[in-house]
Image (cartoon, rainbow over all chains, first blue to last red; front, top):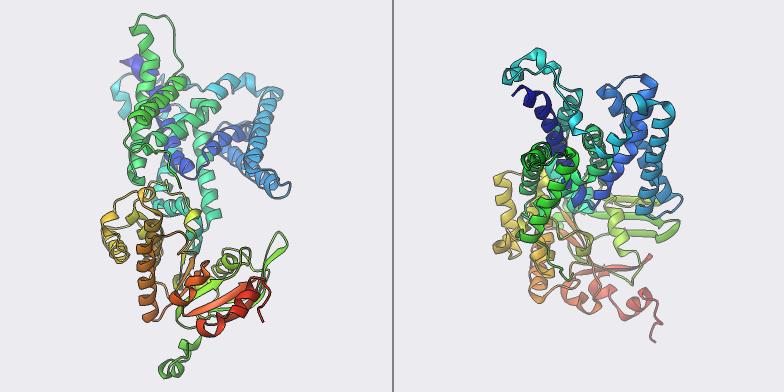
Length: 304
Length: 252
């Protein structure tokens, strides 16, 4: 039990929280047809995090968030610049900016030596759910022990913060986000600014990306954002229900993805270990596949 | 339309619902409409007619503040757009939205209530009942829970009209509401627009089908970047004006 509390519980919590925060904002990314924005955000925040860390020497939550946001805003400006001034086609502008920013991040990581001390490039790419451990836990009682709770990995605090902010903003502005996503022109005529809400969606995606990055990695981030809502879309035509189903799908893939990665190989007698982040994303993909095959709301190809 | 005595006695009633002075709107430096001067009639059904690229949709969008005016002044019931959002209801072209969106007909109609519900407040059961009344008015109450993409084109258009009705505006602006709709939808929409007119509203439609202008509309604005004519259909919708609008040679 102690081992479970020390190793498995914090890792499972990390993977599941990341899946939850990504899935919620993912609903609005797929509805506004900008799924790749989630991917882009994971890439562009890297140089921001590295620069903020190098400048301050701190790995505190607000430092990481500040750096990441600065990088996300710079990228958004660059994309707008390429689109408007240089007249680059939007997806090309996005692709050019996010890969360039990521490359800058990788170079900075290696040149500053941060890669050897605090950040592991492999973890940033592929995630490291297992990195969250809770040595202070001695058993179930630790869950109610303030001293032990303080020793929970800082990453879990960041994820909780991200989850609370993303959930609260979506709950508060649910009907506004719905009308902006469905009919931005009409939304503007009733006094909602599509630009403001566009920025809000990008900011929430950036926040989700920052807090989840350590756990799930840049490459799997987009799977966490897209699979649960895409699964949910196959199962309902109601946006609120879609949100709830996507949360359930994220919970399922987070919890069972970790359990499968941690225990399935040894149960089957194999001497190997599966990466939890990859397994969570894979399970999310499999759930989506099942929904695509059997879901009641699959979209038939329809003439417009 | 001549204002009656009662209207003349009250000053507020004679302020045109839409007033445009010296309006120029340009996209990328190329003017879409130039120096448009236009006062809309107080009530009635009005068609904006003109060839493709004449700036019809642009005029509506400029009035709604969706595209910036390069020059000129726009007043809605005497007010700038920021103070007049509640006075206008807008129906965009049907092709402008994603019909695969997870929303039912009733969800979309309820969007017309959002402004009055207030920001950051949820849509209540009572709001949904209000929305149902407007859906009923366009003959779609039995489709309330149908996903919008599963409706026919005409039904989708009626959902949009019901959403505009839910806005309870004074003036209604519609971008090609009659394009590609079935006969039932056309009949329902004309009926709804006439009842709005009879209640004192102005209903403005960008309209493509010249042949149906006289039977549907009271007023016409002939537009081709500039105002060619604006008056009751009987006086303005002449073959000579139409020819001028479309750049055709004017017959003897």
